[in-house]
Length: 301
Image (cartoon, rainbow, N blue to C red; front, side):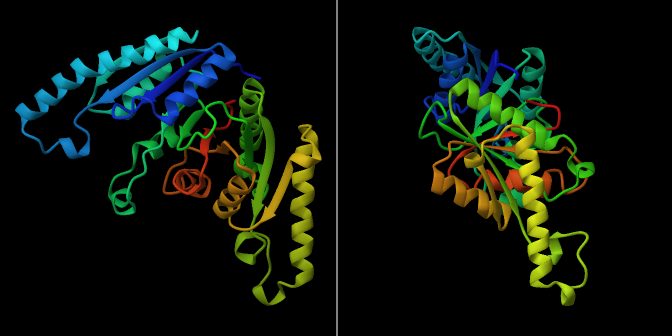
């Protein structure tokens, strides 16, 4: 298990006491990690059209006001025994600035508030959150809601419907990251897998005409056995195992609501083409479940 030592919080300049800040502070305090807070400003999207004089004024205001606000937060956190530091950065490329900080610290965990974007806007501009999911080299914790600043319940969402040649190491990384978070936060750890028992979702299925109830049950049993073997290999108690038939996003959302999960741990793959996330599940789940996401890639914990 990899213990968190250096946390990087990407702060929302407009929300000085956001859910992500509360979560970052709670985790830092629980595991004795340092916390570096970065507030990013810059000519993002809607500011590009501003007059150069107005843009320069916005930059000056940001670099004057944000450090003072961050200092107040840092002093409060230090008063709670947290080793906290901060900086305000004006940049043309927020993604590259974040990745640079991750490499230079180096950070063990990046924490950020989710920033929902309208569907129409997402069709033309890839949101920063999605780009981070695809490119962040360390586990990325996207916080949308934090009923409990320190997580009490964590669920690892694994995929047992794909062969290991398709997602080699992803499930192991998901469970390792979930275990690390749960252990350091003294939280319950659950493991969840969703499957859609239909011909369209089974590469080895025969024609629809031959898709009988017996085949449905045989394939469901095969998946349950695969899930239980994975759980057995990693010592997951039977009462913390959950395999549910249905669309992954709906299954995850329903499970989170019914069991009041604080964090869902999911896997990502940096691929070429449109499918850069496993079925884009991690991206879409950002906006559809009442919990936060911890996204990991193969080899991360």
